[in-house]
Image (tube, rainbow, N blue to C red):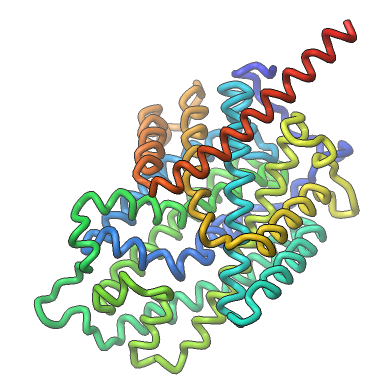
Length: 438
């Protein structure tokens, strides 16, 4: 087992089996922000408003605080361990093999379900009657883009991000222009469900909003492909998080000002409703196109991140070793990418993904709790990353996790248990083989 405090050397770009460093600050920030402004921005405000009511902005702020703790921890660790795999690598090096495995397994399984949900959301926005075939096609095409190399992934991410930002600016303009029925009458913006939930609704609402900020993990999982990682990764992570926080908080305030509370809490497409209820209602198709672009951007980044984490786990034989193969002119983990794509397609064809995607929430919070615990062990740290911030992030992740719906908690806990049991059995079999060979 690797020493807990042993630095992992930066991969040699000329070493066979290693990825190449091609991403700068701009590309890395775009990938992170593109992940955070995915399909979630077009749907997350409604269920969060139903839970938090007039305290929606507080839920966004709480989610942003925990996300900041996690981002600082991720930046510290990614700069010190600039290889693919993210918290899977950090957990192994700082805490031991088992915490690393739990983080990696939770990320791979939870985010695979999220990939399927993103693809299906894209299909529903473009042509609901052909949602599944379109979702499968999106996965196939975007996997093909990833196989062309990380610079192609970054270029397409920037293009899609530009479309999404333009769409969100249009939604904000529509909300500002009004009319504003939400401010009529007694001036309350509290939804019926949010008012009933009271202050306790802020916690599960923050849990939902947190995942809007979780895209910066994609920057860390691509650490092996970032130029000058000690400088680039922290800047890209914090820049992407800051931009996402401003956008989410602004949209939360505008939506509550513009839409009646009951409409916002019960909407399946709150940003689209904001436009159709405004003087700019003719621009509704533009919002639908922006939502489709957001889904594609998030799906592209997710497939990339899951593939890299699977590759890192395969390097340590926590997943089948062939998944670690890197080949081709563009040096990509082609077998890991294809395996992730195949798993997503199977989910799309065999499962109602929208009923199980909530399980990934618990897995992501477990993932970041390991991130904070690993960062807590670091001796050298910048002034803006004190240990108490890591402790706050760790406790915050656990708090948000336990407030999730019981089905989500139990479902993902079962998945984590199955993975742990499988690893335990594989390790026992390897030990018996070594003893027999001795």
